Image (cartoon, rainbow, N blue to C red; front, side, top):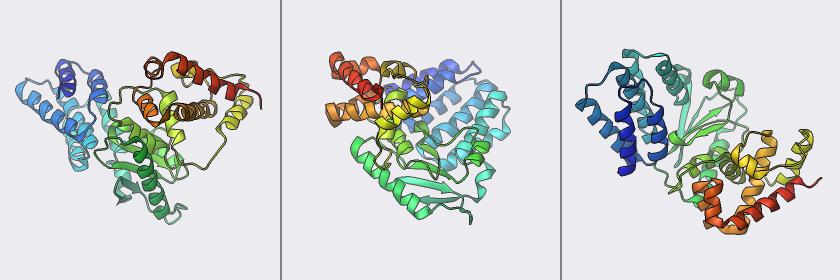
Amino acid sequence: MEHIDLTIKSVIESINDDTTAEIEYSYNQNVKTKEDGIYLLNRINEIIFLNDIPQSFLSWYHLWLVSINYFAGYHDEAKKSLNFCDNLFLNDEQKKLKEKFAVMFGFHEFYNDWNIFETENIIFHYRKDKNSKTDIDAFVLSRENAFIKIQSFFDSKIHRKIDFYLWDSREEAFSVLQRHLGFAIGQYYLIHNAADQSIGHEITHIITHYIDGAKSITSLICEGAAVLFDQSPERDNIKFAKLMMEKNNVTAVDIKALWQNFFILSSGITYSTAVVFAQNLLNKFGKEKYIEIIKTQTYDEVCFILGKDNLEAVIEETQEMINTAL
């Protein structure tokens, strides 16, 4: 597993540093399957036993065990590792990471009264509140069906069930998670979502993260795919983009500029532009080429896949569709 050994190299080089930034980057790039995670766990254990490890790295090590075990689907082991950190000296950065893992992974005491329901592909975590307006059975069925439909298109290498946290209150979610709903973290097969958010958006993010051969992510491409496959009712994305442009006094969108920085315009404009572009790519070049685009996502790589003239033509056509006045 040479690709995992790149992560091991980062671990060794970081033993005497008080950071795991390089390890985290290498982990995200190289660890994609359950076998990868198990191999990485075993190799890190060897490093720990064969080296004189400073206390600061031991703290990182046990936090890493939380991360890798959760990725691999070993929830109980991840929680044990997190609890063991209570016996260690943690610096401020490590304390923040420990708290982040606790609230993201459902290990915080806040989740003690939450219920768990498993389907074939998803583990749902939710709090059954008598005042909740969410039909849990319908919610579960719609998300499971969305997973099946999206996965049938992309055929990704999914090695474990998605952990799906369902929140009734966005305000409560923000107070606990310190970030707004909804979001997916592909690295951990993790989704936190509000009940009223689109059915398949975050599920698409997880599935496309594990496409065999996936190399890079750009917001324009990955968000375009997530909106395209979000299982929402038919809508006129071109019209919506134009309305958002009028509302925000924007006269034109530049797709290559959005490819470089997706957040230079309001989300209403960028997401609707991304999905129109995604639909055009799929319509013009077909499923096989579109999946190749999802694997690479950068402008240069997509130029290589489609040919620069072909890519420039679909960019120009998409911009013309959106930039003409209502």
